[in-house]
Length: 401
Image: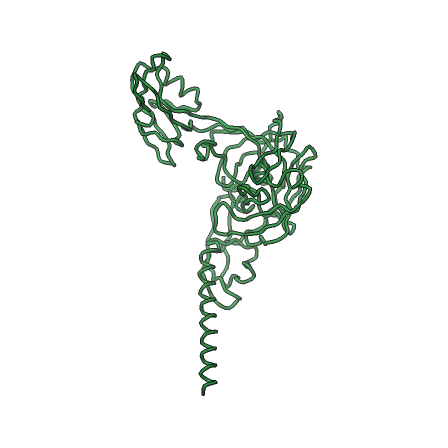
């Protein structure tokens, strides 16, 4: 009898552990796995634990940029226990021309972004007309007195042509449009009116081209948005240009500082950029693009990413794109922008760059013969590691423009 009671207690404890484990897996699947799952042929698995079961998949029509239908399927634990219901879209394999070349970015904004405000001393008193009007750093000036503005020079010219009158400033703040009344103040020792703000209308930099989509005639690069250096806001793009570059040197990153690839901008235009999004910059590539230096790769579905060995294709000198060894150490299916953590393991690249440097954003990541993603950010204080976005996300963004 004592043995039986002991056995029951043991079995009860084991059962409690199993139930807790299954419940934990259900919570994990609901939280960590994507709500929308793309498949090729209807099958998908995650972490070798979860798989799809039952139903027909939806198909996707990129010509109309709309899903024809969406199908719900059960996600099963160990092919036996239903843990969550997910939306499934069936999608045929797609190939792109993978680049890895560095490029120069010239970007002009749709409106003028306020990047700073400052106090002005008038008659011994400190005032800030922009702040008092309600304007904030990061606001995008769309028009002044109903006149559209596209450059900082326009804003300066309009505000300087003033006799003490107020202006109606229309701004875009996070997608919402608001109008404020700004009254500049006269600074006698400078002989002009001042509004107490700094604005910016353009930017330039370098990055890496991830791929060319020949079917759409589009370029995809960076994997992250171009943001204003002062405000951190996504720069509102009016138009932009991608140009060829020549790598001149590399300043190595250290744990104390992330450094960069140094390039000269060349005259050859690669693309007209028209989209600056959370997942990179996109545009129509020009007829001058030479695909002979590119290799076609299938774009992997997100669940095809695996922890372990991979390669990156990047340009760090005049020889052009080269493959270097790396490792995917973490995968996040539900983070919209940081989908993977990648670690550089190639000793020759570490010796040359110290790891990830500025200018490598957009660097393609190859795993199991497919394009799996693109490097987006270096992890602060550890240049050997960085974040990456799924290539599938970039391709979807490219197709849906």
